[in-house]
Amino acid sequence: MKLRWFLVSLALLSTACRSDPLGSKVSESATRHVTILFAADLHAQLEEHDELFWRGEERIEKAGGFARLAKAIRTIREERGGAVLAIDGGDTIQGSAAAAWTEGRAVIPALNAVGFDLGIPGNWEVVYGPGTLRERAAEIRHPLVAANVRDAATGKRLFPPYLIREVGGVRIGVIGYTDPDVPVRQPPAYSEGLAYSGPEELSALIAEVRKTGAEVVLLVSHVGLARALVLTDELEGIDVHLSSDTHERTYEPIDRNGVWVVEPGAFGSFLGRLDLWVRKGEIVDRRWELIELTARRFGEDEEVKAIVERSLAPLRERLDRPVGRTEVLLARYSVLETNLDNFLADALREIAGTEIAISNGFRFGTPTGPGLIREEDLWTFYPISTPLLVGEVSGAQLLTFWEQEIENALSPDYRKRFGGWLPRPSGMTVRFEAKAPFGQRVREIRIDGEPLDPERTYTIAACLREGDAPDTLCRIRGAKNVRKLEIDAHEALRRFLARKKSISPTLEGRVVAEDLPPILRSQI
Image (cartoon, rainbow, N blue to C red; front, side, top):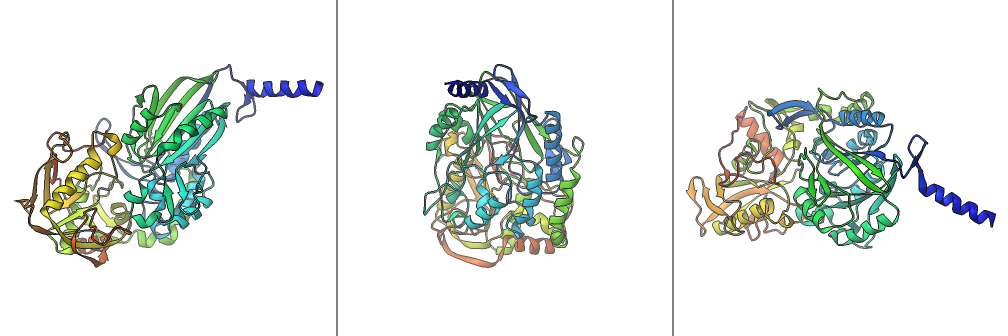
């Protein structure tokens, strides 16, 4: 009987008090303070880089890099006495030349030294194939969580759906959810052998996490801010939704019926800080700050900087090889048109010898120039290297293509948002009304200055998407006489730059929304 009462008393004591990371006891009736640090979409940007900031006055500053991110995380850990949970939102091991040339391996040593406690896989983590994804995940020291990625043959999850962590005396449940559209959004060959499901399991998982005694439930998703808002509205039981994928900079949290939704920018240029105060199992206060990781504000962790330098040393000569020059800053931070993409699309069209070229609406990378364009920069412009395709499409097909792409990027129904920003054309201009109904948005398309003829056939160049049907060209199905060139997009850029010597691309009104600003920084 005495043993029974001793065990009961011990159980009551364990639920009334929890240990903080420093070993002291924290009463649940007391107010406990925990800090969540959140970075996402690092895209393998190992070193500091130029970053464009537009809050307040537009400016360029040195920012980011894994060493600076590590310094910021460690500084805040020390400030908070260790009561910190650091989370990575995915798209981490892809997006740079060093990552591409080593299938992500060059990123791992520095990533392991940054100080993350857990992370989720993004839509680009599959770029090297499922086998390599498993290898890199095993090399990453912190655990990855994702409820909706499975082995297609066995149905077994690749990662646990959630993790429970006790930090600062607060029991925190973290549920991971990545983009279910990966097999369609990315070249299909990348994810062959994997199966992705939608959000249908999340409600049950939230309830399961609550049953473990979690006082705070975080949903970490990689579906983009617009779709994260819709998902938040559809779920009950989460406290904060940490969103990633669209590189949105949420300086102020978005409140959806009491649940905060935040996204922390990209490229290691930002770190989100969420402070929560918890008493008796409930959040009683909360604060959010999007920290700009500029060289003015944070130094670099010397240990992590040395790790980065060692990882890049065997690649340095190739990374720094000059391929051209730009007289202007090349940047890509606009949904509609960018001077960088005008240059890219022009290069594809000239080298392919077609009437039109389409460059994909990538969101990354960081600004380049003015000055030398290096081999490394080509991978910032195009994070994957696949052969160029040329083919023939009708004017009617082009009209259908643009209606769908506008819907993908700007649909008022956030559930229909899909992929990146709008495609980037050369030899073509498009005027549309974003707020018009689907199928009625395009007001005018011109090819080489002439109105689009729905009956005419046009030649077009774009990049191959591995796994697409043979008659698919930049998501345009039913293209005719499609053939693969012997060169890829990077070689097209090298040849274009070699002929031009120096470039100065500008905004030309190639894609204009009559009811939106010409420079649109956000899809929200």
